[in-house]
Image (cartoon, rainbow, N blue to C red; front, side, top):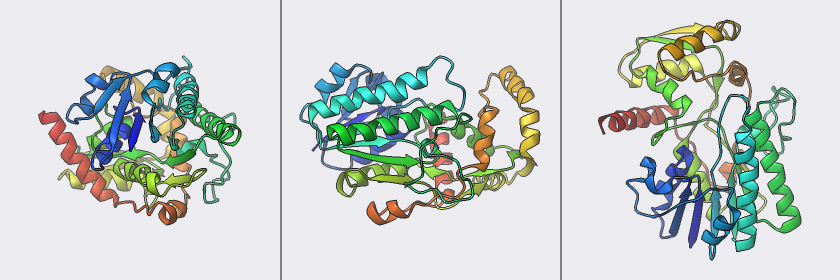
Length: 329
């Protein structure tokens, strides 16, 4: 079986590649800088530098391909002032899907996001039938992922794109080479004695579990299927901070800030992080994410993909080991 992975050097992409190499398939890893990416340096597969907006090149490398995993995306909690999210998440997805249609692939498996689905009504459980995000106060990231979803579904209906979509929640885990802003935030908890936290929480998922779900789509995913992939439970940030501190051997003290206070002092936090030359992991608007997407069902993925999320402690242990190893390298 021939498999093409876009965004292969990214957080999800390189974890997916590490799962796929355990199978007996021909794998083509594509990214803007796939051949020089540190995240793929230790993996012996075919790597091709390719821009997902180059439909001609994408079509050529998909010839005789059976499966396409489209994981390439720009993830950001900040406004899309330069329209790069629109360009990558929507236009790039259109280009890759058109290439897949021309190449007549058997399955086009798209990594979307839980944020492509509407936050409202917040007290009702989110399932795969939840409408897409379209409210004016949604983030640009949410809206671009929703727009890409709807576009792909239209291509599936009108042109026969063999589409499967997964909707992961926030990712945590090892092989976070960039690293992600979430990875940076929780990495700090491993060695701090004072643990700043914000009221609210998140339904994080281990990136390796998402990769497993993607691989399961090869054999078990139904064409037209849509699957939410999340951790087992929504966890308060203060509880996560305590857990990561314990895993790091520090047993720090959590200092919890109410959400309204975090929003009030957000400009000061951004300024302090700039002085320290460290990225601040939250935009002012993104703080709202800590109280949304709390009630999520993963029953469909459990039934059809045999999905089983691992405990968050296992994720924290893997992150600690990987970050320690990556620093020593």
